Every structure is written in structure tokens, then in C-alpha cells.
Image 1 (cartoon, rainbow, N blue to C red):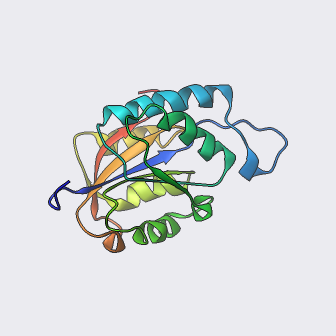
Image 2: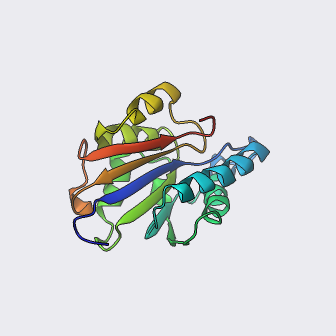
Image 3: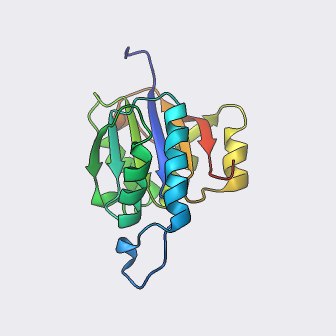
Length: 172
């Protein structure tokens, strides 16, 4: 990949979780969530992006979502389970992304709302086509993802520096 190509960041919300009597961190996916995670994985594969790195919350529902989605990708990226992604605010997620090595060009972050949706809104200084309208209309339901592009080093990632290039939700 040439230096001229932008970095790509996918912000992927975990699929629909079940509500058994367990701590929030341990909630598993619901049956619909398992189905949607596979479909989301196919849609991620359709983007043609080869991810260098996946940052995944340590919560059960995010790990299960990623495990199902990644099997649909042609290339399995290195996955880092990062406890700071669980219940993180957009600012905390930016801090995690600022620490990434610059060798990582394309990154997927598997996390939770409201942090993931807020981060997509905050990073997107501009948007292509109707991506922002679709995201604003749909919100950020379970298994949705936003694709952003960004020119610059990870430590320079901050509000409004990226372009929202695509958005997908299971009902699309």
C-alpha cells in the first residue's frame, strides 16, 4: 500500500445481544445477533478492505460478533482484545486509536454504543454520497458499521479529520 493511500477505519458495533442474568460485560449474542454478525462480515468483505488490525472490546458480545464476522473476510487481521474499548467514550476511543502503530493502515474497531456512534460522528468532518444522512436516519443499531478514511498518522487522529465514506446497518 502506498503512503498516498488514506488510512481506513471501520467502526463496528457489536451485533444484538441477549439479556440473561449475567453481568453486562458477559452478555452473549442473541440468535438474531449471530445471524447479523455473519451478514455484517459479508458486507465488510464486500468493501474489499484488507484489515491490518482489529481492536475488539473484551466484552463477550463483541468477541462473539468479531469471531462470526471475521470468518467472512478473505484475510484475518491480527486481533487485539482491548479492555479500554468496553464502555469507552468517543474521546477514550480516539486515545486508543492514537496509540496505533503507523504501519497499521486499515483498522477495524469492534465496540459499543454510544461510543462507536459518537466517534463516527465526531471523526467525520465530511461525508461522501448519502452516508451521513443514512447514519443520522438509522442511528447506529446493533451490527452496524461506519467506514471512514483519514490521511495522517494515528497520533494525529482527532475530531473532524476523517471522511465518512460508507455506512451499513443490517436493515439496509
